[in-house]
Structures are given as structure tokens and as C-alpha cells.
Image 1 (tube, rainbow, N blue to C red):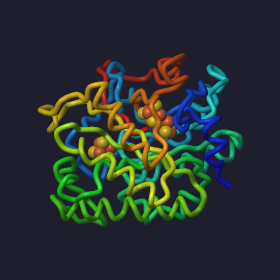
Image 2 (cartoon, rainbow, N blue to C red; image 1 turned 90 degrees about the horizontal axis):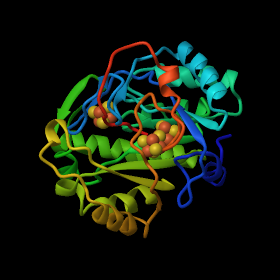
Image 3 (cartoon, rainbow, N blue to C red; image 1 turned 30 degrees about the horizontal axis):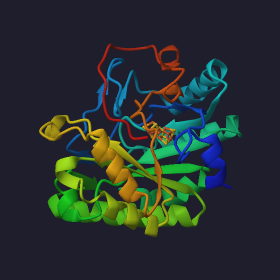
Image 4 (tube, rainbow, N blue to C red; image 1 turned 180 degrees about the vertical axis):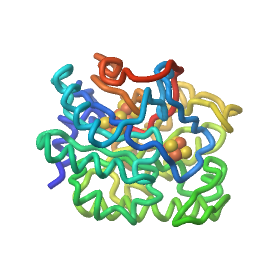
Amino acid sequence: MALSYEDLKVNHPCFAAGIKNNKGRVHLPVSPGCNIACNFCRRSIKDTDNRPGVSREIITPEEAVEIVRRALALCPDITVAGVAGPGDALATPYALQTFRLIRREFSHIIKCMSTNGLLLPDYADEVIDVGIDSLTVTVNAVDPAILARICEGIVCHGRHYTGTEAAKILINNQLAGIGKVSRAGITVKVNTVLIPEINGDHVAEVAKTVAAHGAKILNIIPLIPQHRLSWCSVPGCDLLSRIRSEAEAYINVFRHCRRCRADAAGIIGGLDVSGQLYIHHIKAENTFSHG
Ligand code: CLF
Ligand code: SF4
């Protein structure tokens, strides 16, 4: 049985609407590939950038079990094992394989997964079956004309779609998937990347729509302008605060997001043990995480 939203508020660092709870998380970068093309996404393997989509390395599900063991020894306040990229958790089978192994070894840890939701209707039964406690779906618009400006295209069941055709499929699948896992008792968080020039006036509509489909909490993440959206502006504190307040009319709002890397580990905004866990490769910058 998945943990209740009330339990997650106390024990999961990203589900505490209001006061921070100072619990930790370890991200397991097991998901290299993606099946959609967000215009702001720039994934990379490096150790410098602090943003989603960046990881020092990609690990196997078996290696992930060992990483969780070491993370708990380094930071006993870690309560959550999460998969947040660097690609999409459902585009490859490794995230679900990882959670099956973790459930066997660490019965107490909260299992958290983040996805773009394209394949959620296909995999909802498996998500429920592996015992995911908290699921994040990134929904950047619920209007196909707006989403088509944020996401260039998708690949679904072997076919490539672009424009509003792609956006309609993605929105339908996200909302159907959110409904299905919510009805099974899994707490759903929605992440929305706030892009002032594109979806700034649309976030309240996203909040209203995802709440109606069962999502419990919304995390509005300010855009890091890069890749094909490098022309957009960084949302200011006033705008972010106003839009979070508007959304709060429909759904709980999470305000402590730190736009974690795909290999983040430790306390959000506090003790960081990721450098001691993921030491294999390259040097890097700060990027996008799915959390
Ligand atoms: Fe990781 Fe995301 Fe789970 Fe949290 S992060 S998969 S829900 S355990 Fe948290 Fe980081 Fe923000 Fe994500 S602060 S980027 S919301
Ligand atoms: Fe895929 Fe996430 Fe990048 Fe979008 S932001 S293209 S869903 S990895």
C-alpha cells in the first residue's frame, strides 16, 4: 500500500506544502533516454551544473541498490529513493526494475518516481505493482497550442508526432495516467516549468485541471532558459510568487524546490553527499531535473 499524502508531508522532502521537513532523498540516475523533446531540455553527463537532466554517470538497477545502501550510511536522514532522469523514467525499463530491487532490500524507504507521463497509461499498473509511493508528472500546459510551443515532438509506440498533434497525445496520456494512479492511492505531484513568455498566464488552468484528475500538489519550477528556449526570461520572484498564489486556489503548492540534478543525494538545500556516491566520470555545469 502506498504511503498516504499525510505521511508524505512529514516524511518526504518534496511533498511538504508549507514548512520544510528536512528529510533527504537519493536520486538514482538509471534512466538515460527520453521519448519527448522539451524545448528547454539539455541533458548532460558531468559533475558541475546544478540542474535537472544532469548526472555524473548512468548506473544500472543493481548498482542503484548499492548506492542506496551507501547513501543511507552517509546521510541517515534520507527517507526517499527517487528516479528523476536524466531522461524519462518510463522511456526505458530500468527505473521500474530498480524499484523492484529496492523494495526487496529496503522495505522502509519511500519510492519516488518522476516522469513526463507519455507512457503512464501503459505502465500505470506496473507503477502501482512495484509499490511507488509518490509519483511526479511534469505537465507544462493543458492546452495543445501552448504545449506545442514548449515540446517540439514525441515518439509514441514507434511513431513520431509533432506540433499540436503531439501535444494532444501527451496531455491526454498525462491526465489519464494521473487519474489512474491517483485512484489507486498513489500521491501525485505535478511539476510545471514556468516559462513567462509561453505559459505564464496558463499555470492556474494547469493547477485546476490536474487537481480535477487527482493530483495533490503542484511544484511550479522557474525556467532555466537554455537550448531552444534560451530567448525566454527567468521568472522573477514576484511573478513566481503571484503564480504560486493563483495556483493555490486549486491545489497545494510546494515552494522549496531546488531543481535537483538527476544524481542529487542528501538534504535539499543542506548536506550534499552526491559527490561521495557518484565519483566515476567527467567534469561539468548546472542544468534541468525532473523531480
Ligand atoms: Fe526526487 Fe523529485 Fe522525488 Fe523529490 S526531487 S524525484 S519528488 S525525491 Fe524535489 Fe528536487 Fe524539486 Fe524534484 S526539490 S527537483 S521536487
Ligand atoms: Fe525528456 Fe525531461 Fe528533457 Fe523533457 S525535460 S525532453 S521529458 S528528459
